[in-house]
Amino acid sequence: MKGDAPRLAMVAGEASGDLLAGLLLGGLKARWPALQSFGIGGPKMAAHGFEAWWPHERLAVRGYVEVLRHYRQLVGIRRDLAARLLADPPDAFIGVDAPDFNLELEGRLKAQGIKAIHFVSPSIWAWRGGRIHDMRRAVDHVLCLFPFEPELYAQHGIAATYVGHPLADAIPLEVPRAASRAALALAPDDEVVALLPGSRRSEIQYIAPRLLGAAAEMQRARPALKFVLPVVPGLRALIEPMLPRHARGVNIALLDGRSHEALAACDVTLVASGTATLEAALFKRPMVIAYNMHALSWQMMKRMKYQPWVGLPNILLRDFAVPELLQDNATPAKLAQATLRWLADPASGAALSRRFEALHRELRRNTAKTATDAIEKIIAA
Image: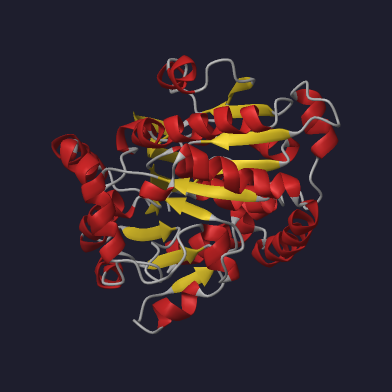
């Protein structure tokens, strides 16, 4: 490490990775105010002085078929990034999630003596367990978000540290429901459904029409319902034309970002599988998890799945605590029925909230500081 602070290269490949990396950078900058960080990232990282050589949206592709369409572009970015980092090596490289992009890059950098750290373990306990061999080859250390993960890596001789989940630190234990409703111009007694169709273009294309159709079904059943739909920056133009096609006349407020306010304010959320489901759990909200993707990608993923659950809250609780409606089951009618059941049964919602509070406490570990401590030791080793 030259000078008073390290130079760290980082790659976060989508909005959720940018969020996690931004929270990590907060801890790194607190330890090293003169920290230099650069690579691929988004606005949350930029807020901490991160220099984005490419925007994180360039990597926000999900599903085998979708990746194939962008394969040459992704390989080109990875090749150019590796060349730039090898020409001027950082003190360490931190790959934030995005294992399909990051693991090969980490392996190339590690082979040339650059410390390779992976933040957010791939879900080897849920699917594609063979990836652990790639991890052993490619990384020096894994920073794990969930308490059961380090033991899995220890069995394969891979150094790992449980750092907790940064969202559990960022989201308050006591939900700021009243303040969030006021900020979104919602009345205390409004019934509110938050619609979260995902953060990638492909997710919006496949999932948003189903969620909007479900909103239309729900409003026919309960005309006073209000809906809020947080939109990831840059995707508003993709969602707006869908409203008249799938939810004409439905009371849906599009929000620029503000997903945490939406989750704090809502009574229930209809949410695409991914990090947002964990955010919903940390806001103690009942939810219905939805997902839909290209049929070929779905068949390939289904064959490699080890557990009966897809959504993070269910995986962590090891129970179908919330409904999962996936692929052909994610119809507007079924999504609407499952969401309305939560509104009709507040006692079940309250019981679920208590389970989510216990989960929240388990995941709270001051992740930014814990991860920074681990990174400092790795750099010094």
